[in-house]
Amino acid sequence: MKSTKLFLTFLLVAFVFGGLIFAQETKEEVKTNKEVVSAQSLSKETNAEDMAEALKAIPGVYIRSGQINIRDATSNKILILMDGQRMNNAQSGGYDVTTIPIDAIETVEVLRGGNSARYGADAVGGVVNFITKKAKEVSKMDIGLRATYGSFNSQFYNVYTSNTVNDFNYYLSYKRRQSDGDFKYIDFYGLEQTRQNNYSKGDDGLVKVGYKLQENSNLLFTGQLGQSEIGSPGSVKGLKNFASVTPHAITRTNNSYFNLNYSTKEIFGKADLNANGYYQYFRTRYDDPDTWGGPTKSDHKVNAYGLELSQNNSLSDLISLTYGYAYRHDNANSTSVGDKNRSTHSAHLSTNIGFKNVEFLFDNISIVPAVRYDASSDFDKVFSPKISFMLASTDAYAFNISTHWSKSYRAPTFNDLWWPEDAYTVGNPNVKPEYGTTIELGYGITLPFINTQIRMNYFNSDITDQIIWAPRASDNKWMPTNVDRSLTSGLESYIGVKFFESKLKVEVNHTYMDARDKSGKTNDGKLLIYRPFHKIDFNTALTIDIFEVNVNYQFLSARYVNTTNTAALPDVSRWNMNVGANPNLFDLKWMVRLDVNNLFNKDYRLNDGYPLPGREIRMTIGLSLR
Image (cartoon, rainbow, N blue to C red; front, side, top):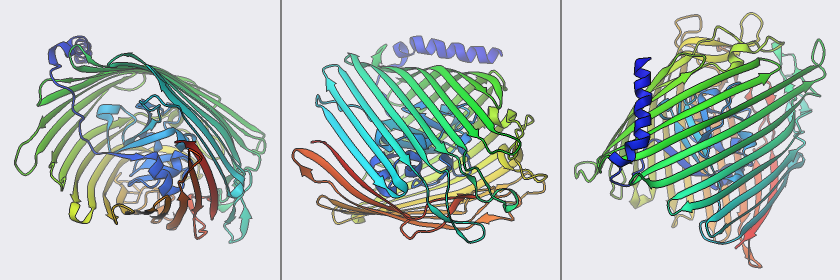
């Protein structure tokens, strides 16, 4: 207790006086194993309309039912950020990224592996940060429209506008989406069926309003509103291979998020300060009139509010500090788990020790130790350390080597602990927190004479008491349990080549992963469910004047669907492509694109019992001011 108070006191003093003492030089960005990609490029590669579709092209990332899985980590171990603000809720632990319209996103930042030392207890498997679009710095009105129509009566409409006037700027966007979702599939008996009650419709809005208070100080308000209604068709396989479809079940969601950000540079000298206050509200309602034993209705309301402060200071050209404090309160008021609360105080501190112009094998050497302290109201307090070591050359080959070691932590969600027993699932009040240790070693190199980039990254994740939902042996109901230990190792590889002055680009990603139960019990040595050995993504883009062609191929090897490894989903092999043109006509920028998903009409599943569409065709027309 005494050490905790001393640590928090140090952070408070550092916030007040740190800039006066340490601010001598402008902060340099710390290099990490972060991968940054534009939402536009992901959309072209995958024909995506939402971020769930788009992220499937990133190495080590798997999407199931709109949830992000990274390597061996399920969605509640992946921290989702929106402009740096966490979006995971305490009841489910995850966040449905299908609700994020790709039109509102500028870039996506993906950090694979344990990052609790900076981001807290939810970042066991990785962090995904969605950076939303904003007004351009130049004073110019920008307006854009886009409409898409496709198979299964799928429709998407998007409109946005932005402008900067003196010290004031704004960005506004709205998207409408709807689909009948009535695709054909092959059932358990080999017969062709039509997916029923698979419709969806929803609206999403984004408002960003900024004001420059002073030369280096800015105030930014962000508001997001979304609502959706989707049919919940159920499983076409069900327990013991009997279908458990729900032809009249409906899920309705209402989400809202508000954030006020203040940022300033050169406070107390040249230190940076960033402050966030936020409020989030998520509501999910589920109605099924056909449940055995009578109609089922559930209503889950989850809200959170909090404050985050962070500051960057430079001790010298050699050493810089980043530190911060955060408070968050989570509340779930649910017909399933009741009224539950959790309050968390957190503090983080990292040091970047950087040697530049070394003039040895590498020009730059960085050592980054970091630690985070999390004090939750319902679980033990935790310190999460991490250390990174990076070597980089600045010549044309840009050769770099990096290694990371980290400890991570995640507490059980409200659903893990208190979900009531129903026909398919049951919570487990005996579930314990899980702890993870991650080691990574990677390198990257550019071969300028053949316009080629190569990256490879080895990872090893050792998680004790990992929380996994899986069918219970006694009655096949899904229940969370602590696997005493799981061990995952793998290799992520990337090669990208550009031809003909970058008119033709070819990229290949491959992820090899071996994720096993190491509990020493009945299933020791068995593969963890839904973790493929291999994931391959092939992307190629050809640009000729105003025309562009993109082709994407994805392969997933077989995935076991039960802990005993006696049943598995077969390999998935899919091709997508699109052809587009971007002409300038009548002082407007136009965009016309034809997308074809699942080009060869393959029947496949990512979740056992839940078929996905065959061939899907979409046509998009868009325009914006030049």
